[in-house]
Amino acid sequence: MPRPSLILVLSAALVPCVGCSSEPAWVKQEKQAERSPASLQGHRWICVGMDAKGADPREPLSLEFLSEGRLQGFAGVNRFGGSWSAGEGTLEIGSLVSTKMAGPQPLMDMERRYLDALSKVRGFSLQGGLLRLKDGGERIVLEFSR
Image (cartoon, rainbow, N blue to C red; front, side, top):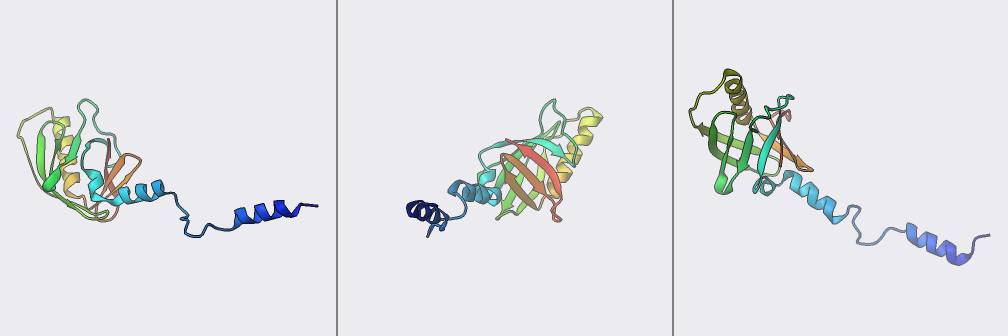
């Protein structure tokens, strides 16, 4: 037969804590970071996937979100810059300008695909250091890692 003190301890452990959250604070912070525009800045994002294909590893395609709504990056042959604006989970990339160097046709084709994909971005999600840029239909068009 169980002792009364053991039953009391077990039943107290099953009573939910008043004022306690069901999620730890770090989980809440991670969820906020997933959609917070501030989480985009301060990193050089390296492209690890474009239209479900890996990016060329010779010199990584990159993207940096700078302060005051500016961005810059490397597109395979040329460097580019432009503007961006974001809200909670939304992202709009403005007109881009780039240098005008020529390169091997496969790299030029990849650069065109990369810049075209950036122009289609309407949203983002960030999870565990993986940044996913999405089009208006929530399809992932680019993936980046820190």
